[in-house]
Length: 181
Image (cartoon, rainbow, N blue to C red; front, side):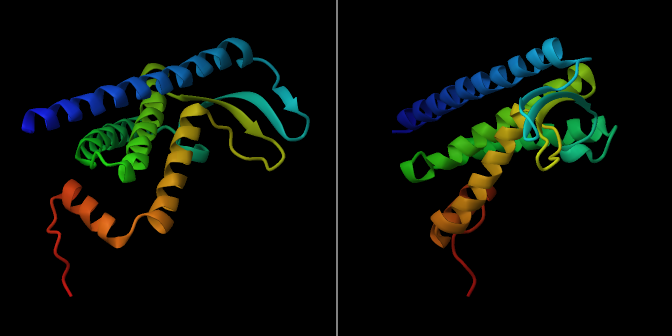
């Protein structure tokens, strides 16, 4: 039985790694296209007054905060990626918890996509711009992280029950499954 569980865990890691690699590849390809087609160019208007492609080198975090804190972001990303790998392996292999597997993979891909930029370029390449609401310029990796976090919040507010959360806490953080009354 233990051999079968190890095979299942290895299979889950391989599948997760392949999906994450494909997502990271998509993110990096879009950033290469942004560099080759948008850098040193005027914004490319998709829908006038609503949406455009606009090249930006972001040396900070989301919305451009904490500019120039590369070492901080690298350390935080490494910690987050290691935690995601660990949590992914601890998640139950039950259909009910598959959305959390997807969230881990998507967060991992988003974190690694921007991590690559920070390490290689010292900045993150952003290029999507919603001019209608003057929303900060972002990229595909940012979309991954935003969608994963939004789904995570929705699942924990409306889908998972207290027993599910207790079980996950026990598996991931090695906490006792008995609750204090």
